[in-house]
Amino acid sequence: MIRVAVTGAAGRMGKLIVKNVIEDEELELSQAFDVREIGKDAGELAGCGKVGVKVEHSSELNSKLDADVLVDFTNADAAVENICIASSKGVKLVVGTTGFTDEHWKKIEECCKVPAVISPNFSVGVNIFWELIKIAAKLLKGYDLEVVEMHHRFKKDAPSGTALKAVEILKDVTGKSKVVTGREGICPRKDEIGVFAIRGGDVIGEHTVFFIGMGERVEITHRAWSRQAFASGAIKAIKWISSIDKAGIYGMKDVLGL
Image 1: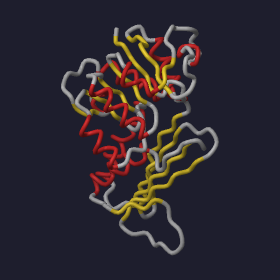
Image 2: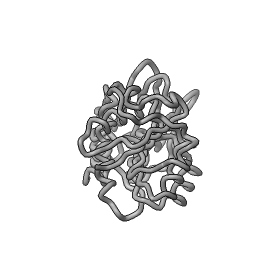
Image 3: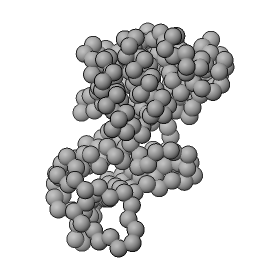
Image 4: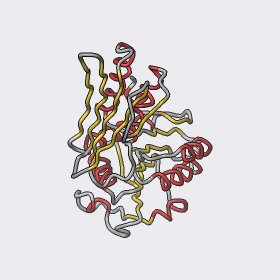
């Protein structure tokens, strides 16, 4: 059995991860941490009934963490601290938190000395989406590139981590370096990649990359209508990373063998 600890266990994704871990015969929920719902049974919070694992305060992670894999879906500042704590204890990592800055990444790279899957999106479909836009960018040279993403009204970071990953792929393939996030006033299009974020309602996540030529356009879109798409990928990542011995930061591309 792979012993799994979850930080952010009382959040939307955290509760879903807890539920999936509990229902998987190869996994065991060993610990749950959050800054809310302290003392409550993590299984009950996830809608699975009592499992005997109470939510502990995140401030106790350093003193109490005891698991094979730590899954983190929190916020960027908290995730960096959690990554460093887990690494210091030899606990492997699966991190789905987004919104990391360059400074965050610098600290993560300095302190992460264990095998870790860190990805802005654990959906299998999104990872195929990234591969498809890579192929399209190679073939549709000279086309204008626009990235549009839509999420629920509660999402804090913009553009989304998935959209930023798409932009990085497009930059690598095309050599374009200029990125414009939104346009206003007089702003004729130049050799740039446009990125736009839409926020509203309860949209789980939608991403479209437009390849726009003269007289035609190609659109590659991924739509998620359930967070289960992300949870299923995270479970795959937990099982995969548990078998990896070489320390390093891996992505879902590695998990899926793409």
